[in-house]
Length: 70
Image (cartoon, rainbow, N blue to C red; front, top):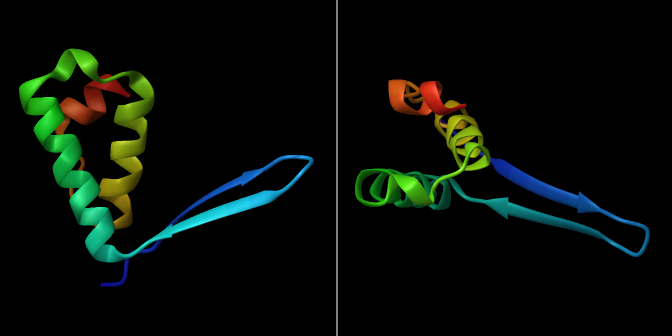
């Protein structure tokens, strides 16, 4: 399984791209999970949407709590 997540931003002055390794993606997922467990009030809908993309990119089942908040 090879996961690749690329964030791109384009504006009139420059183009930026950030790529994460599979290990990075798993670490980001774990970070989200901890925040969701400890301080769910900090999370916004955009956080849940990003978490859903991350779970899908690594072929993990999207949890019910993420689905409910998207």
